[in-house]
Image (cartoon, rainbow, N blue to C red; front, side):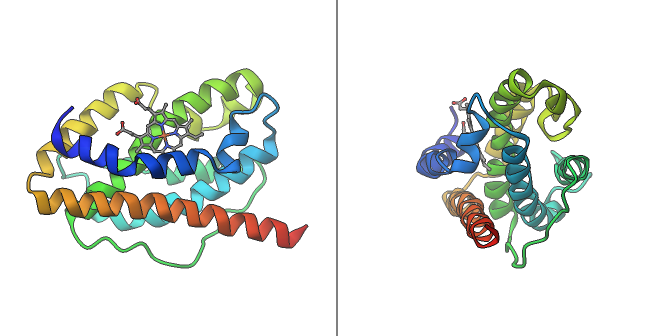
Length: 192
Ligand code: HEM
């Protein structure tokens, strides 16, 4: 494994574990996963992707080495299909330069690896819903997209300062998702 990727992976390892342990994500892997569980996770991911994507997209336009394909539209379509409203959570995610944008993108794109595991599980447990959701069918060839992402990231993050900024941004991105999940949980409790 090359340098920038190895550093990013090690630096975010604990965050990944923490996120995977959130009940929202754990429930998706239970045999008794429900449409309500799915709805809660998709709402959280919408709030997360909507905020991070709008901050990184200016750095990865169609003319960049590896344009970024937004996942927001798929999430929007799935939430509409499930009869939920897309909610924008106030707050901004600040991206000051391209190294920071790469750190955040690493997290967004790495989530596709986990998405594949979840998609396989949902296909077995909620086959009718799973086959109509767009988000869990994005990038059928995740491995190829991921290896392109990693080699481009390696080429773009050359200096220790760039790698450092990307690493901090990747941790901040995981932290944002974690905090949004906590906010959502508090919101649900208040409504009960
Ligand atoms: C239940 C939820 C999740 C599961 C089961 C899961 C599972 C996985 C798996 C199996 C991998 C591949 C590891 C490897 O090939 O060595 C992976 C990688 C990754 N996941 Fe997750 N994931 C989950 C949620 C997330 C979320 C929500 C995010 C971020 C928003 C995320 C970010 C990443 C990243 C950045 C990597 C790449 C690590 C690397 O550099 O190799 N994951 N995940």
